[in-house]
Length: 145
Length: 145
DNA sequence: CGATATTCCTAGTATTCCCATAGGATATTA
DNA sequence: TAATATCCTATGGGAATACTAGGAATATCG
Image (cartoon, rainbow over all chains, first blue to last red; front, top):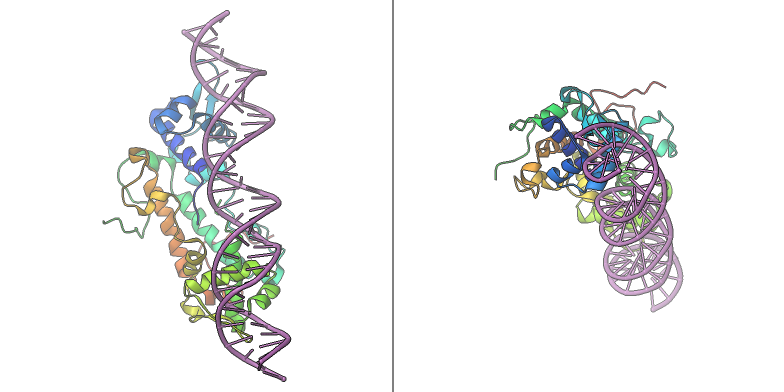
């Protein structure tokens, strides 16, 4: 469950690459990050449409971050590639659910959405770009074996 | 993103039905909950293998909860239908990731996993079964329109 | 005993989504 | 003008999802 699509993982790695290297072409990012070049092109375009990166065409063109990595929250990246966090359709449609009274788990899903949104909002691209070993979480998983 | 599969939604609704009604056949649960009957059969079987429900065959058989609804955490339900929460493959494989140094987002994903696990562990089936309007979350979403 | 109602098991299928590839049009610059 | 980019559209393979179908095994009730 909650398997993150390759597209989102690629987007994140590409953005970290830009945060660290400043500016680069899609082809070079793809090579450095071991991502299918043509596929990455489309992803970068999507990130551009969402305002996360800017691009320049032509011979010495390429992509760069459209704003400081500190001010890019990871939830923006996820929204850019996958849209809004929405465990079930009815979470953000007020009380309109086709199931009516059968939709008793709705508040439960809203709680899940809030938990995920809250975490993704608390981490910035800059946090990922600095490669020091830091903890994102309060209740760390077992790492010790 | 994070779209919850129909299977998991069905499992939850079926379990709430059992928590409220005590015991029932797959066919009647399916009818009451508007779920494809044959599909639900398989799901209930899966829940049985995970130890969440018990079953009796034969004419007056059916399904019932294998333990109190208070002691069934929602994470158990999710694990029963979808397996472990695992945003990316390498989250629970210590530091062994095929990407090696390129896997800088690993700690980020572990943090997400922890956030989701923590929430799903904090809610019980009993919480869902009582139909009073209660809040599962600390930072509620906008509900006001 | 026999009809009925149930769970249990296996196989198949239609659809959808994801990931990637291909080819080229458009733009910029050295 | 040649080279190097981004940008745009279309397409295909593969996997997963959500069912569907048919029946075997099991228990109950008259």
